[in-house]
Length: 463
Image (cartoon, rainbow, N blue to C red; front, side):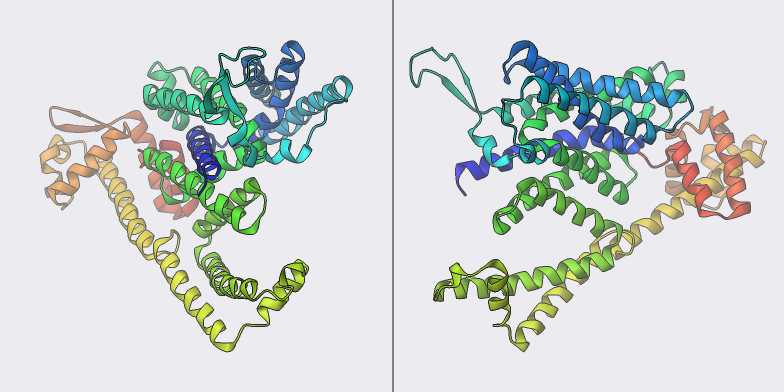
């Protein structure tokens, strides 16, 4: 690997982590589309900033672009609160207007400037290593500047440090306001401040990554890793970690896929993100398809290297003729080899991935047992008024549980603010009583949707 390749991978790694953190909260708040709206509407802020200072490297552009993103959120919520349209409709109304105003301003006032539309929409990571941050430049003196390296690394790196600092400082407030705004307000946290703080961080992240990777990849890195992680776990801390992991994995794998195919870097990364999500969402079919593609690619690459070595005018052929020429070399054993590779890879993927994977199945069974035990425990507390039945140390006797198991269920209920313990006597809180009533309805109706809505309402197992 050369230095440019290493730099590109460092940049996309930083972007992936920086986008995954606010993206996780956007997915949990069911506000995924707002990232797409912000990524387009910031163009208006960038254009206005450029007209003011006429310098594309000015910090004012970032400030105004961030402000444009926040204005987008405010307008969307203002329209939504009228009750005339839903949130997705409001988003569809606001960001095309702001984006169009930015395009009009460019066409009317900067029509002599050449704009590469492809680079604006999908970014051009291949140029990011050469956009350097230089300081102390003296006019007329060559090589007088102090070179600090690629500008994108500094911009995204600073944004990531700020994001991580805010996440650590306000993690509890963000978690509570995300899953239960009413509880957050009761505890003294302002859900409005948390909301607009998250939107501001999202806007700053999108603005910082806009120049290097483009809006399409920014949206993909902000939403797809978080959506994939959400299929794995409902624990917030684990979800944040998995979102960062999937984002970095897709970014690095996408870069090398683009290198191998000589294709768009941003497009390849987005494709890998989609494949990762499909592998988790529908593991059997997707893993078989991916395994077959990998098997064919391995054999194809071997023949490609062989034909390239032989030469005989192969390089002058059209792409379709090259592919046909290589596949004509395949023999029966090659297809057997491909099927064996596909079978092994598919087996591994199906085993480790969620939904139908064996490892996930074991985890899911344990989680369901915990859910049932929690319901049984809360029903027991509600149905018994005598203190002996609700004593912490006697639970294992009255519900016939082991002491360690009863202790873990009590801690889970207490963690979710469903019970209070006074002098070792357990009592239901208002929230616990409400949950128990809904649990009774679930038991009577036996509808899976009921329990999922309950978990969404009371954020059980969320970390």
